[in-house]
Length: 253
Image (cartoon, rainbow, N blue to C red):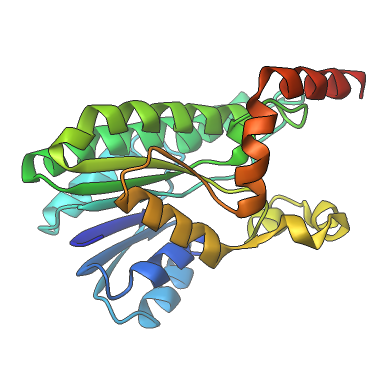
């Protein structure tokens, strides 16, 4: 990866790890998140020149405003890392549909709009790399929330389509699908009890996930399942035989 990289959700977790692994590979980093103090601390630890933009990408106008801000600064984006995300509300328990719409904006609409605005200029320059952070939760249904997994399924589907549309112009689009990963995500989502009670061997470090995403995108692969365990499980979970058995078990629960 080369040129200028835009990383959303860069203040922590996978976003911050993307910044660290792209440090020295790209010529400039644009770090975007709501928490400016975290972004400044991250930028100070990097050797690559960085631009910090505080932005709440769950707001409808934010993707347009972000792209206009980048253009005013005289920057163009060669690498897009769509990483910002949250766990979201349980769809069967939603009582504030403003929260639901903000979730859908952040997890799907913002991802699509940034791709729509930034990929065509990459095509005209003949080079681009896009990593849309999805999840193995988007590969098969569960009974958890009715929200997070389906939003990631959309990210996977749109990434596959965009990769087909843009790869002949030198632009590769990849959906990165991690499983359980050591980041702040579970603490912020109030899921630490579940994390602490789960087996340690199902967890992967953020550094492994990000390296898989970068390498897979550079190779032009539309979907990357990160982690040997999840790459082994994926075909079983997606097969009609095992999928039916799993859904029956989930239904009984």
